[in-house]
Image (cartoon, rainbow, N blue to C red; front, top):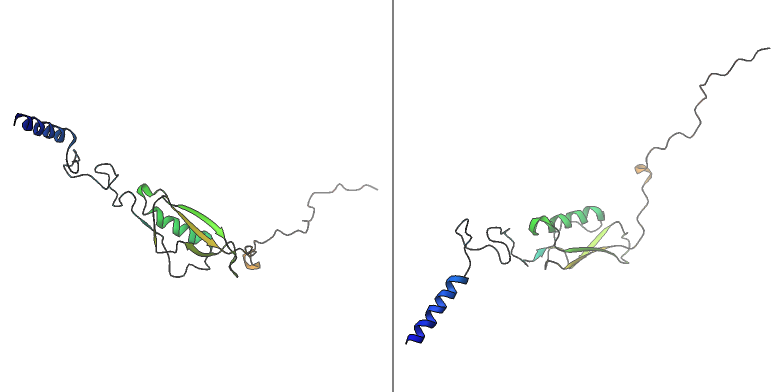
Length: 157
């Protein structure tokens, strides 16, 4: 019986030293934050929570830079500290008539979830980017030489 009492006392001391269940945040008295997050520092997204790949209604065919920015921003909003927690890689594929400057799709598809630390491939076409249209061209400076306005010495007879 004495041996059982010593064992129980040892268990109680161990539990008191190391705690049982979720630890308390000493500053607030509340139970701990999200799994892996420091106490009282939970960001609403538990460590390892899946990340949703954002999408608009009509992304395909839109300028790559615009859609990449939308995707990256949407992912950052879901990551702790707004730091990119998914790798983004652009890959050109032979999908006529799309160019390297136009967005085609993502792998995995948009509006699906991926694990933090995984890679999302942004697919573009493989055609060369279209040259700027004449409407987009900057006005070129006039190439005709300006009349010389420097005074010429007068000739004497």
